[in-house]
Length: 232
Image (cartoon, rainbow, N blue to C red; front, side):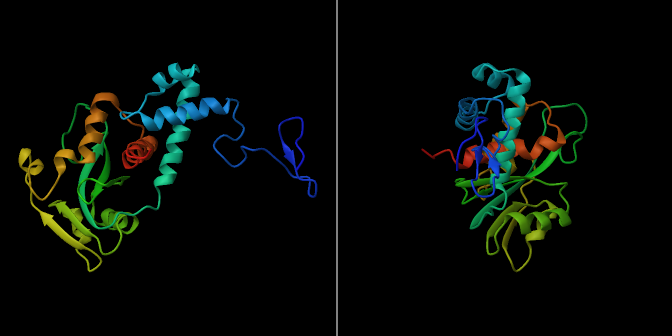
């Protein structure tokens, strides 16, 4: 396949032209690939993540360029996490994404985006953070079909929507934990090191507000990095 002067490659039989970056997130980019690879490294290797502003400084590009680049990479993380289901012993918790804002507190708070946090084997070995429209029985049934493998042992608190796991497909242990420290110190859970708490703590410190459409990508960023924390 001969190479053309514009950096394209052309098939000598059908004359179809393509580039090495066609069909990838690098397609039609005006940035050197070294900038992309450095951005990937910074985004995946820093434990607490990196803001678009800091990324722009590290890469030597404008804030707008860094923001677009980061969100393209977050979308790739989100797509990579899709279709993976947890199995075995699974702890579930309801959680919200969104920084501290005045108004209603607790479940159903305004300007908060609900998600289900789940960890595998309680270590946690692997985590999953999935956005849901709300904590209703119908929505959690949909979540269960999408995210939890049949035969799993599911442990949750007493939130009513988690009755969706009361089927022959799962072994479900429901524990009424109450509120405050009692829920955290319950021996059936490892909430003290639960990813939902880490995600929300980081969110309160660094991310005052999330656009609704970006919520799955921010969750995917944390999940992707956490599940690969021991990778070389």
